[in-house]
Image 1: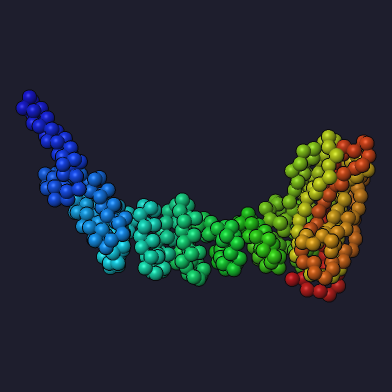
Image 2 (image 1 turned 180 degrees about the vertical axis):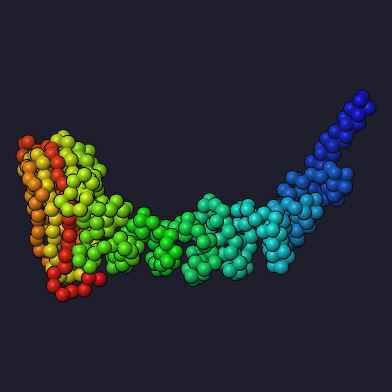
Length: 410
């Protein structure tokens, strides 16, 4: 036992001495490093640092020296995908494309689930204009993790000329990645690419109401409410019912859960009032919109609102309303205005206070030339009276905006 202890101590002393010599006397001596490796005393970290320093150099001989060092490191562990990637990068910097390709092929084989290494392989293919190969690798990354979405999508917009190539090769058959790509395009304001991507997403049924709502809101901001209305109707499918056929308001009876879209009802969230869909009472069907005021505020706000794409002409607005102990002189009213240029059209209809059973309101609205987007709101205006804090409840149902006469509904 004592002999074994002495042997181990001697080995440790030799290793320690070799390490000290490597870091001092033999520093930057590649032959010494190779000799140490023959007796299993390699200083890999120092050799890696030296190789990276050479690779960062500006002279051609620096890159060639880096190649030699990375090859030495790889000989010590040929199954290390990181070392294959390092050598591939050095070959690429030296313009030795086929050698670099071989190295990155090894990376793909050894580390198929390491996203950071796959990204290095993709960058190699992008660097040499091999977009199809690069897109196949980035699609693999997108399937693995969302961590590199913004990096990859930035490269797509910078290096890939046709968005169709991204859709064909650069996205996995995966709804998460497709939605993320569309949202990236929306954020970047790339309307044409977003439209093509939306069509691709919609064909595969990858879109939910939130994504569709975000997309149509983007189109409206970009000045294309016509595209927005078409996309929303197409997304709804059978759920659209008579929307844009008999009525230009969606979900006017509140029979469906409200979708996060400008083409569905957007409800207020304000102190002193609760606004919610109510399926315990209705003017028709099963549900309505309930508005309950706490009697603590003199509110002036839009309780609920929706926008709709229209063409000039005459429309008939219809709604039913019920009130219960609704106080003050300012109760529930309806406002219809041009959502883009309010001076073109801005009308306020009705005034409902006190207590009354379900009652109809109906009026014609003339949409002038130039108006494309209407905003329909349920509102309460501020009262100028001393006793101005509104309390009580109201229910709204069966809102419709119907075109009158022979006209296109699209």
